[in-house]
Image (cartoon, rainbow, N blue to C red; front, side, top):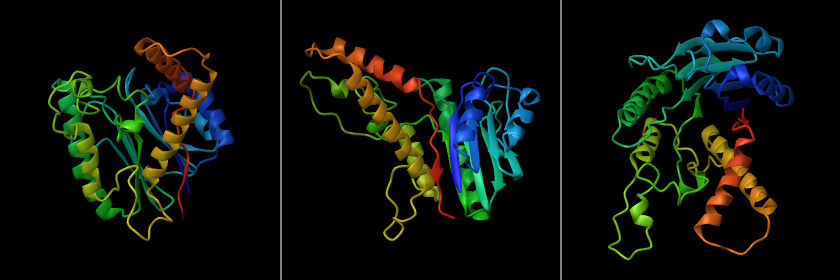
Length: 275
């Protein structure tokens, strides 16, 4: 079975790109994030003409998720049961013997903010719900936009983004001599790792011996995204004009070109799952 995930950042704008991508990459199921459409405006006719059935859960301007499958999905659930949430972030359905969960994790913004606290509560609620889902559906995949960088290599500019959300904080990376800070696990990465305790392997982490032939779908998705990001970074660096190093200003300019190259490509990653 082939699965995919894509943050489309407005389905109304990117519907042609989605249809074109599905034509060239006929996956069995795809989950979308940030559709930014109320359900009444979801383009069911265009999706059905492409050979897919859609389950949607949206709102105006923000958020919004959808599950597209080759056949009709059953036992559809919207959002996290038992968690009071006005935002449309989770769509779940059963298809092809697989429980598919598409999630758009909250952004969280700055540590200490209300949005950051909401994100941690949201992840905690997701973790507790996943326990019951895994008990009822052992064949389960969680996909989507996690809004978490599991490792520094998943950030296009680890030094520039070295704040408490991603690493130890900018002070820890200062060149000024001072006492070496004690390394701690940032709260979002700790929350992501907690999903492993539920029974979902953490994306990017090797599986138990003997299971190397069947890596977890989330692992392959992350690795595919990493490969795409690193390929675009290398391409941007190769296309940059040759010039002597001139310090941080040139580094920031290069990072800006990398970001431009990255934003020009879809953030989806198709993954093949063994039957």
